[in-house]
Length: 151
Image (cartoon, rainbow, N blue to C red):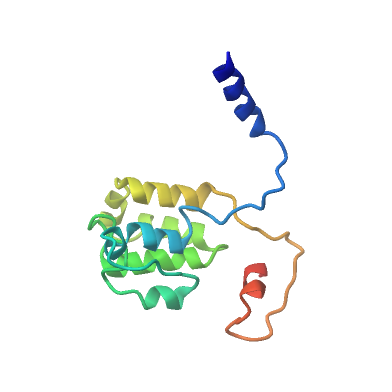
């Protein structure tokens, strides 16, 4: 009886309003991708790195870039990761990457980790702004991390 009550209570808790802030995208976050799929990090030979923009990705070594078991070249992996740094464009960029590039990329989607990442990028909700939102950029590059997240 208690296990049924606990299961039902946990089911009902999914529908309650929570005051917890929405967390960052899990599998679609470039920092998570690099730290969980890069060969150097899988072997435990390196400290986790923070990947926030394209420059961070360009400074990764080939051992730090995730190749997903060798199905992507380091250059393809670098390009693929860069798509996750542009939230509003990531969906068309990712779909184009697999649909119109090297046929080997489409075959690479057999890899479970790539499936999870693409699924998260396509279907996890992001932090979107209303269509009438307008914020003017006054300096490039945007140095203030808070302002960058608000754009």
